[in-house]
Length: 259
Image (tube, rainbow, N blue to C red; front, side, top):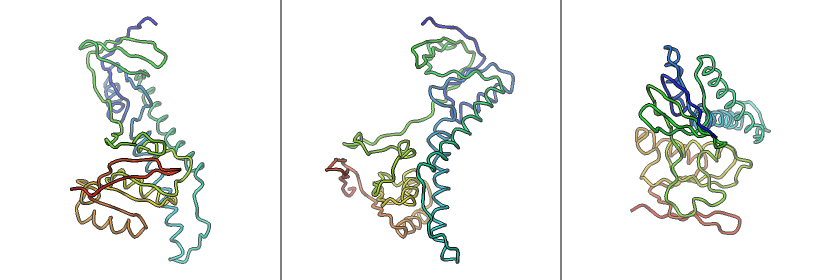
């Protein structure tokens, strides 16, 4: 397909919280803005990060409170989770917020282009879309806001079926009876709490001597460690995962104590 040419005052590469906010502000100040995003606006935060995880943590917190309500005289004996409905609720919340961002961009006359951009000259970009088409645009200024992707540790077996990244863990079809979370940082513990509340038996493996390394005060980390173990989680610190293997119908994680 032949290239099409457009001109803009500003091109923003990436439609996450950094990119779309910059695009909106520039358009508000009168600039002609093009925003290029290869997937969905909102970035990690709206689509596979903050928003969907907070939907799940909010719902699972309600579930835990309902199960513990007998302590204060409130009987809710049938508290449980309807997983398909929960996942549908999560998706609808995400869709509503992503749609809201798209409407804001439209209202500010920001041109949203779907595709992956390359800077071919200091003032020119080439944009390839999913159908193989290519468009070139010229822009006086370019903002790079490409975002991030999940990092996969160099562990043999990470590509086996049943091994999930944080993105895959947000859209499950069934609740696993047993789950091993590799990493006791903020993201790993958030998913550990979600799955434990949904009914999984959860083990957390963290390579450093304490959970939440570098994220919070040591006293708070120790307190949280104790509270999570009281909930029934198994937490092993100073533990390095070496490989993951499939044995029969299950996955087995092989780890050793950090030296």
